[in-house]
Amino acid sequence: MQRFIEKSPEGFRMPGEHERHTRTWMLWPERLETWRDGCEPARKAFTEVIRAIAKFEPVTVCASAAQYNAVCQLFQADNEEKGFCITVVSMESDDSWMRDVGPTFIVANSRTHGSTNEVRGIDWTFNAWGGSVDGLYSDWTKDDQIAQQVCSLHDISSHRTPGFVLEGGSIHVDGEGTCIVTEACLLSAGRNPDLSKAEIEAKLHCYLGVKKVIWLANGIHGDETNEHVDNMIHFLAPTQVILAWTDDESDVQWQYSSAALRVLEHERDAQGRPFVVTKIHVPSAMFITPEEHASFGIHMNGSLGKAGDKMPASYCNCYLVNGGVILPVFGDAVYDELALSTLRELLPERVVTPVYTREILLGGGNIHCITQQQPC
Figure 1 (tube, rainbow, N blue to C red):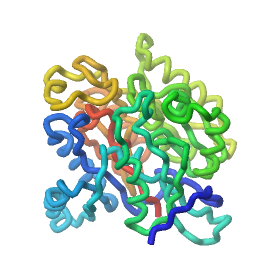
Figure 2 (spheres, one colour; figure 1 turned 90 degrees about the vertical axis):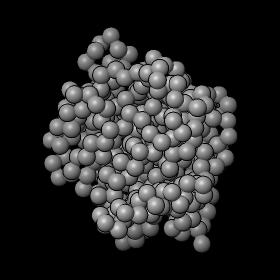
Figure 3 (cartoon, rainbow, N blue to C red; figure 1 turned 180 degrees about the vertical axis):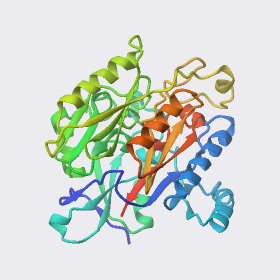
Figure 4 (tube, rainbow, N blue to C red; figure 1 turned 180 degrees about the horizontal axis):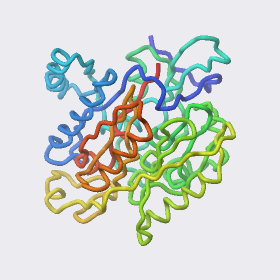
C-alpha cells in the first residue's frame, strides 16, 4: 500500500542523473493542442526515444485507457524479439511531460539510514507552468495526480508539497548537494509569488536534500516553461556541466548563456569544487513552418503558437541512462555532429545515441522533458 507523507524527507537526497536507474518513466502523447496531426508524428518520435532508452534500462510507459491496448501491441515485439523491458500501464493524464508532472525521486542518505536503499517520491504541486498567470492549459487535474499514481504502482512513499509549485525540469542536481535553477522560472509570477528567493531555496534544501542552490538568470530564450534549467545546462557528473551556447553575439541567447557561464565560472559546488563547463552550441535557428502550424487540429499551447516562431532547441535537453546518453538531434549537419562528438569525448564510458526529435520540440520540449528516472 503506497504511503503519503506530509512531513519533509529528512535524511534523503536527490541522486544525480548519472547514477544508476531502476527504470525510466514516460507518458504517451495524446493532447491535440500539443501534438500535431492527431499526435501521430509525436508518437513516432516518442517510440524512437522509448526504444533507444530500452537498450539500456527498463521503461514504463503510462497511457490512457483509450490508448493502452495499442501501445501494448506497439512494444510487444520489442520485448519478445529484442529482449527489451517496456512495460505499459494505464494512467490518465492531461499531457505527456513526465519530467514535470511525475515524481522527483529521492533516496535515503546512507550516512543517516545505514545501508538502506529506500526510494521515495517528491510530489510537487503542478499548475501547468504558471496557473492562471501564464499556464499552458486551464485544467491540469490529471497531471497533478501523476506523481502519486506513479509512486503507488511500486509502493513508494510520496511527499506532497502543498502550496509549493515546482516542475522536475526546473531543477538539476549533481547528487552531491548542488542544485542549479533559473530565476526566470522559479521566481515567475505564476508559481510561488508569495515566497521569497530565500524561502524557495529553503524548500529545495528541504525536499531535495541539497546544500547549495545556484541561480542562473535565464534559460533558453523562448522556452515556454519560463526557461527551465534542463534546457540550458546538464550535469554529466559532479562538477561536470554542459551549457547551451551560441557564438552569435546578436542573439539574445548569447547574453543568457554568457551570463550563465560567468556564474558557473565563479561559483563552487556544495563540496567547494569549481565547475568544469563545456559549451554545446545550439543548433542553427529552427522555426515552425506554415505547414506544421496548419497541421494542429486545435490551436497550439502557450507562446510557441504560430508559423515563424523560433523553437527553443538545445542539445542539453539530453537524458543520461545506464551506460548511455540519449541525445536529441535536429537534422543540423554541423551542430548535430559537433554535439555528438563532444559528448562522446566527455563520456567515453557511455554510448551516445542520437534521436531525431523535431516533433517533440514542436510540442515545446525534448527528451529530458518527457522522461523521469527512478534511481536504484
